[in-house]
Length: 149
Image 1 (cartoon, rainbow, N blue to C red):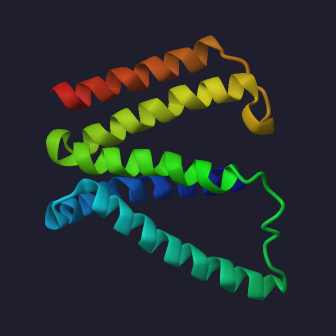
Image 2: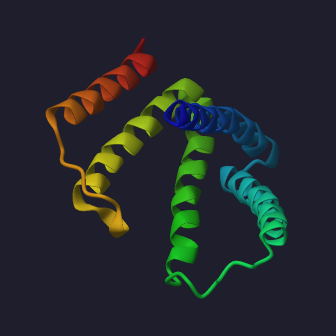
Image 3: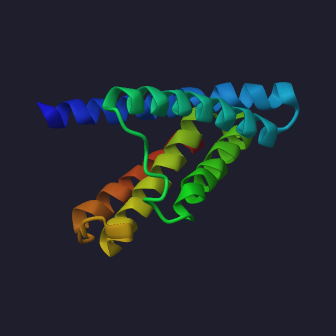
């Protein structure tokens, strides 16, 4: 049952990303600059996350240990997210939300397979299997079909 709920949570998160792309693209058109839209999106997200941190810390009776992670980790995730959000804002009006999502998920899957293989940042190592390669190729083929037809 838990695995099913985790899968649903992942699907819901993916749906949020798909909905976010056209919203941010419209914001980019309204502001006249895709990068400004990415900035507004990240600022809004940062405010919401700060509120969640405060509520969670209060509920748990403790604060985050800001010294607990390497300094570069404070910026790496946000910097990578900036590349994604800005690219999605730029591409969505040009190739459509479905194509952007299909290519983004394809890139996520291919990178994920490689990260699993090397055990990136202490993740469990998972071998590259024929099934994983076939799944990635099918996803890329699906992305191309979504874009081209």
